[in-house]
Length: 159
Image 1 (cartoon, rainbow, N blue to C red):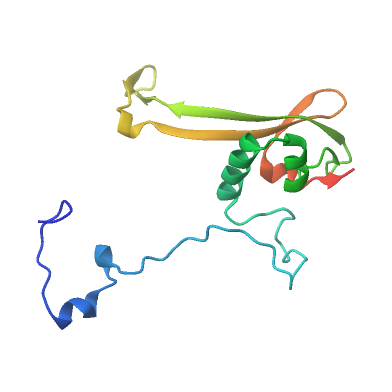
Image 2: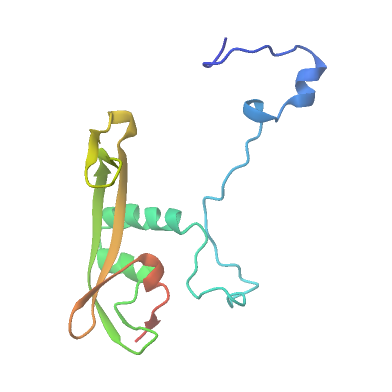
């Protein structure tokens, strides 16, 4: 038995012949951890929304990490390309008021009972508590404030 499971590993050449299969995989495929704009194709592909970013969740996590550590948040926003003044697709002018980063921890779960009128609540054990951060950009549109995601601000046109 090793690492929580029990089975035979044959010795010799047959092991190397199956290396890379299942949990014995020698070189696991690695997910891309960096996003780049290719210089050869500066225009988005047909049908692809402007501002669409591969691995947006990773980009957003890196933004949150960098923004919280930045000594000059305004300059960080400029480097990130967040527009301070922008226009929506319908022509509404927006002005950036603040950046909100919420820390969220899910510590309980509910399950509806049969019929749906009542529910069961269970606190989660520490190993099942999930933590995440939510990033929002708060813009003023002339009458009220609007909370936009990173993906949404990347589609705004600078004013």
